[in-house]
Image 1 (cartoon, protein in one colour):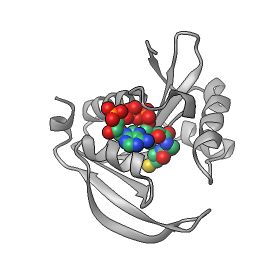
Image 2: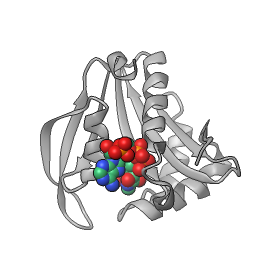
Image 3: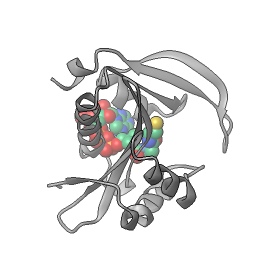
Image 4: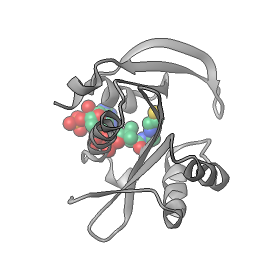
Length: 155
Ligand SMILES: CC(C)(COP(=O)(O)OP(=O)(O)OC[C@H]1O[C@@H](n2cnc3c(N)ncnc32)[C@H](O)[C@@H]1OP(=O)(O)O)[C@@H](O)C(=O)NCCC(=O)NCCS
């Protein structure tokens, strides 16, 4: 289905990211949140995947906190799932993070989100803790995952 192109988020891309959020999450981030992220560019990074027609098919955002990569959001348009886009985005942001000095990575995932858990576990993440009732709509625990030795995960 590719090729896919990965680009950093710009102001003009926010509508595309909001559409991806709406299609993927019950509690999507808002325009104001993404505008604030764009202002915080020493810490906050976001990348969009597009197809050859420039359709936005997925995105991934993260914060760099000293030597830690905090993955905040990852989503792929439903009709483009299971084609490797999330894996490609994760590999891309991991390399980007390593280049910026990250040595380990963390993220949270709904306990019931088996697709995401399988994806992350396949990339070397392991469950290390639980934040009870962390999510709303519906209320659900967050599993905390970490990937130690980040550079090994993209070899
Ligand atoms: C989770 C999500 C990002 C995966 O995106 P994707 O582009 O479909 O993932 P990939 O095609 O790269 O899949 C890589 C691997 O992850 C696992 N995986 C992904 N989706 C899966 C599913 N629905 N069921 C089982 N395993 C799945 C598989 O191991 C898959 O490898 P395979 O296709 O060779 O079996 C996508 O389903 C999504 O956007 N979901 C809604 C938003 C979300 O939950 N984001 C994560 C928040 S923490």
